[in-house]
Length: 106
Image (cartoon, rainbow, N blue to C red):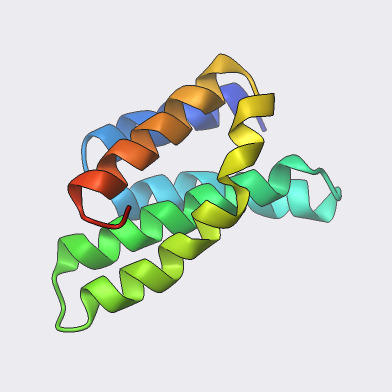
């Protein structure tokens, strides 16, 4: 499983507001990394949480914002790991933070 390809696709889907699909792309990667006890698994889990939070808001259900806030906390928990990662991860984390500000999650 190619991490770079998955991250490129995740960023593209995130940028196109295809949050559910973005979540699906990195979820497979997260499962693999988690099984291998790879420390990157935590950051990937945070990215999944961000995508799910954005999807809650996109669907605009009555409790969407409350669900989104709770789910987005999973990204907040691991976002500082981005500063130790490659530029690609930093770009993804910055994009997530920008979208979160637009959606009033930050």
